Length: 183
Ligand code: FES
Image (tube, rainbow, N blue to C red; front, top):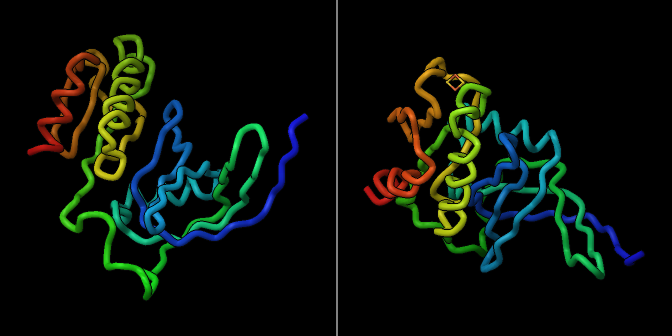
């Protein structure tokens, strides 16, 4: 068995975005100085992020304080798990922002309920995560899987900001993202 050491950590940094697994928030991405961290979240942090998303309170570049446990494993490297998260002030010794202040978050919702999934909703979500990851848009695009949006026969349904798309083809996701992010 590989040896591993656990210590607590506290990071203050800027919110870059989050990562989904299925339709749950799985990781939060944070920039501290020149370093970027990908932190696994527990249920408390997940609830905080979902609430912040619904209330439209959290945007890329906002300062957060994250407390959790860091596991240093000889085999797997360093893993972070966030146990609590709160809004923070920019530390005095940090430049005003590392993320362009004009950067706004494009919100993408993808229905992950059965009718849409039968019509390709999972493939749409997968392709969306790939496009966002490949283009390093995590700080600019937030992704959320949702429940039924009431347009089941026209699925898969996707909403980008306030624009609704129906019968979305996974192959067209990239172009749809371009239309909004580069607009
Ligand atoms: S299942 Fe997707 S809109 Fe109803």
